[in-house]
Image 1 (tube, one colour):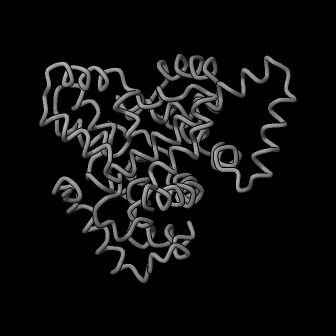
Image 2: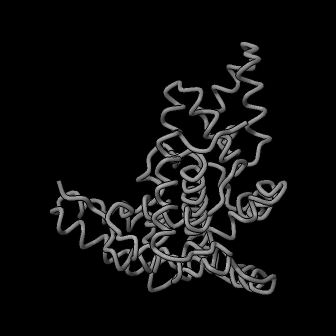
Image 3: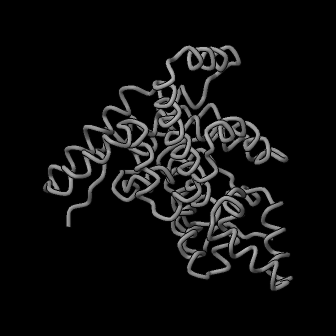
Length: 299
């Protein structure tokens, strides 16, 4: 069966753009109280766009990346495209994915929208938005909703792989099915899930009603604990691994290619000390062992 995934050269370009921004967010989360700082950083956007429902994307990995396509094509555009793809061959579907990914990598304005690098740019965005006609503002809001949902869900999905060795898009369906360990791991990474995801909220309320003290105590601990609590010594390299894995390419990149990607993404400036292929191979081995062991040990 043919695996549908972006072409290698497009993956390289996409990760070069995404990794530095995601790593900067990760560094924010690593600071004392950092996950609260990150929540506050995007709090105004979430409030304005009513975006807490992004956590429902964790129900299926495909939904996360569909959010990006909706931001780029619009809801109606995605509907039309889906109808065409349902009748298309695997080769035609692959061609569409390549074309869409190329559009994303050639115009990284969507990253600038999410990560304005100054207060002045934030103000420019606000004034430009307010100057738009009402119908165009509605389109911008809808695009922003899907864009924010993709960035937050894909970011926390990567963090979950780094910490637990398993994606949120795997943990959340297990938790919905009654796996309490998966439930606790999921809310440990993204605190918003507990109150914004209807299934998690329902399980939590049931635990309150049943006075399930052990479960409630574990929930309280996970909510207070930093998502990155534990020894992540090589976050930049691990972020590259997680992004490659999300795009279904980690197993098919030569280690020399991953090393080049780390350098091209500018990870050296984060003091990752990326030295040579042997070094990178050791880090990948550790990453794989962490996944098999179920992630970092959590005290």
